[in-house]
Picture 1 (cartoon, rainbow, N blue to C red):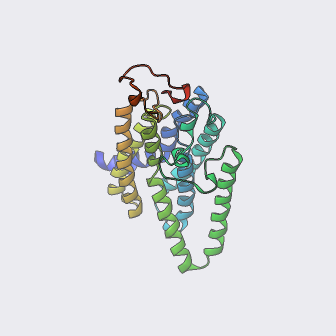
Picture 2 (spheres, rainbow, N blue to C red):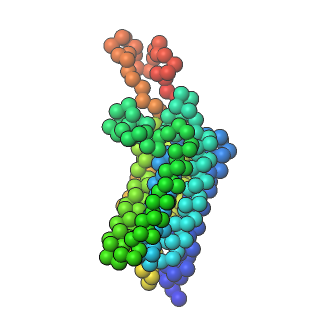
Picture 3 (tube, helix red, strand yellow):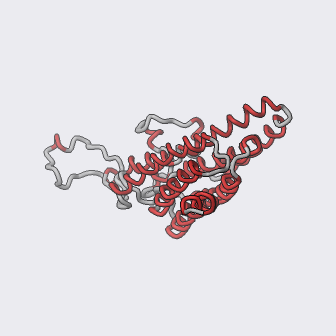
Length: 275
């Protein structure tokens, strides 16, 4: 057995299965240790929980490699823990750096042009988050039971939720990319997560295109897109680092008032840079 064949048939599937733990254990520990989830996008647990649940219910109709199914179950468990820890240690909007913990915060202020109906996934109470995940699971279970006897309808349904789930997972890095761009910092987002994402992407690409087991093309296409996003996220970390976050500051006409560049100005405390 050649080295490439050994990696593709043994190492890659094992890595895929345990990748959720490798990717997020350090992030969970960091949030728990610092008692703050500021800088970490809560959209990450949302994306991974929804995509993993959809992938689990996609399996009966697609019968893809069992390593991907096992990964989905482990991902659901680890993301549940991550969401719980992140919500428990989420700073309030009025606290220092608190806004960074709210996904797409700028959408409310028009910065990103995004406004979520009913403040979806931006609730202050933890209860709606768990209700949404529970209702999604119940809905998928009921649809599975109702549509399974209808062969043609079930085939369409299974393919639909499969590709929707894969597409959702592919956009995983985007909320964190937006958060990093808005704050000009990667503070609160662990380098270990970025490294594991990129490493996992490389391993997946090798496995997807060399495996002898069934890997639908949807996995391959979405995997390639996600790898591009992860590489861009790595570029952001190289540019911004994990230093202090630079929040948006309004000029208030300082230059017009005769303040030279670099001089101290009588700005209010809320207008200064903070982490």
